[in-house]
Image (spheres, one colour):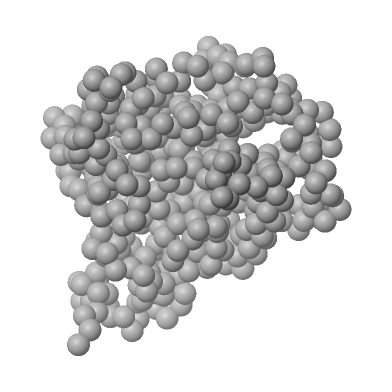
Length: 428
């Protein structure tokens, strides 16, 4: 006989006849996360239906995640990632939107609270919060990723029929040539920290007003021209990394394909959000440092983040083409970014020091009783497999966290230097 996992997830309250998990929910960590999110919302199944990450049906009705994940993106497998605008821009080190959503659900954060991601990356946490109607703040030290995250989130709010009217009346080649005529800027611009907070929107405002060519694209509505900019940056990334390989193509071919696929995703997103009457919540993106968060004490209701695997991945090199295209001076970034500081011998020591400081900052900004979820891999450095999960679990009670636990997730067919990823949950 087949074991019904729903019985275990719900402590026997329901079976697979009334609640159905997605058919690809099979790993232990997924069942554990499904159990956690269910037990937070078990007394309000109607709300649970539109919030759940791992259930395909609740009381015989399809969950909202079923509809959201039906807007399939490039490289999507199942219901865990790459749906809606998650797939925009090929950023290395993304984590699963479905997993992020379940953690927010477990924390019980609603529209009255705030979720923080202090290592924002390409914005996965903000997109999931937006779709849950939960206010969110992302802090990211790399200005290139501030731009990417801001645009990906803003694309959820574009009125697709209006944009489509413009796209149908405009030559895609003309849009491509607008962006491609801009050479990498010889004059680098520096984001001075003493000139006030830099948000994702402010960086884009300055880029458009001072560092992009004049022309018809620059005169478009803010969200539209940013959408087109991200299409070009995606094509530039594809071209940069595939140049010299069997998959090399002219950058214009990449752009035209990306534009078609981006537009199809926006159309599907617009249609689904209206069909299920879901109104996303706009997030906030800040250029900043996870070691010195620009937030007051006890101001956030939950944290979901994945610190950079910089001791395994060089994020500056990965996004160098984007920074160069926009002319942003990131010369000091390598000395400030967690995991990139130091040489081969002291890099691991500095990484540990920075991670300790980052988690202390998370503790500072969390409200009492609130949770932080940290997703971290066991990367290999100097032929040694690290285990910062155990270190964090040791630090947690010393910092004042009253609960700490970790779930282990095997990496199947993922980045070669990762064997496991750990979901570390801390409660203040």
